[in-house]
Image (cartoon, rainbow, N blue to C red; front, side):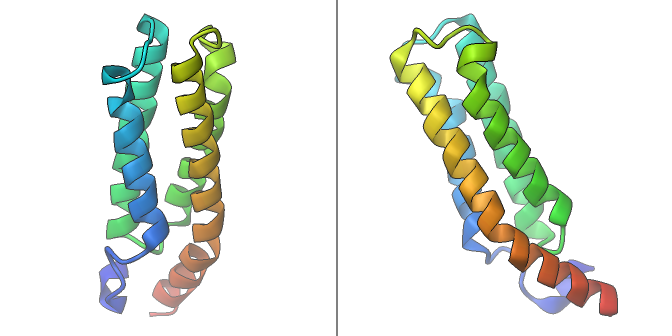
Length: 122
């Protein structure tokens, strides 16, 4: 239904979330991790990338933008919760990816809300 407005696959924030997710998922290949760090970054990165595809395909989905924000918070907290805060590279990857995911999600919310209202009116 959102495709009727012709704005699918265009929002830069969702493309940024896709890149952040893919890079986070691939980061264990180039940074020192333990099992908890690797699994956490791969899983959260893949889920972030998948939800960014959801946002790109359905730009009126406000829920997907909230999911990006929640995943960003989880990425930011993961080094402490999952016990890899002593691994500098993995920790900084999680912290930076988490902050960036929250920032792009917050900046996409107004556009997603507007698109949602436009779709709802049709």
